[in-house]
Image (tube, rainbow, N blue to C red; front, side, top):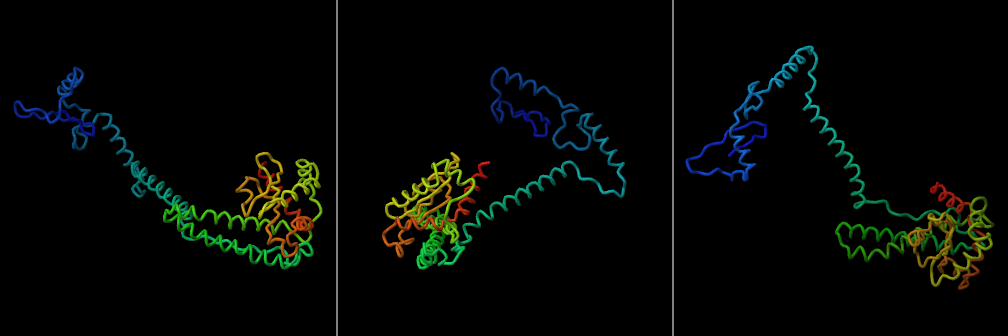
Length: 322
């Protein structure tokens, strides 16, 4: 059998006993036979070093000349100067450096991502930017106190509890548990999101009309401020059961849009609209003061709408589109 060492050397075929075959089948076809004869007839030359040959024996004249030039250059280096690392050493050092940097970068990315499964920052009840009685007589202090410290707080607490269970289900790969927990995440997560916006949409110094670009956008998309106010009131009063009336920003069209969401469904997660102004029409938002007359509550809440906050939200949406 003819073999070619990995180093590029050559070894002659080892003859076997008379009549014995080779350890592997011969090359088939005329091309294979010609190739085998050509290889068998070769004799080692100066450019085909044998495996294990040392020194300059078996080297080509070109390699020998290169080796001599390298030796002369090394001899010219000052005796007190440290020898520079060889090409192979520098390559190895560079490779190790790159690997260590890649490992460090990967660890920095993975650790926070994996760490979120074990620990996270819990949601908390936001403070109101005003006192419970600051919106009177339009919304009394008792409603505000119960609405904020009881209802909103319950959404926050339930959301934290459900998220912990959901993360445990993720770690265990329990898909059934994950699916079962999703309605609770949507309800309590939506309740937390919606109320966090709602409190900032209200102000004891609110009411009246917006100014500047928001007012112009309202006139453009609804005809006038009064028509906008009438439409949002109608949509909010018409919510069957519990839910929210919203003024949102359609980022695809760059326009304002009115929508209603049931229960605590978040506006953006449900419709894709970015929330600007939300009106809570759950009974807990007005029943203690307005009983079952929702239209009276809607008429009163316009007196405490914080148009500065709504304008800030609108301008933030416009800036993202630039």
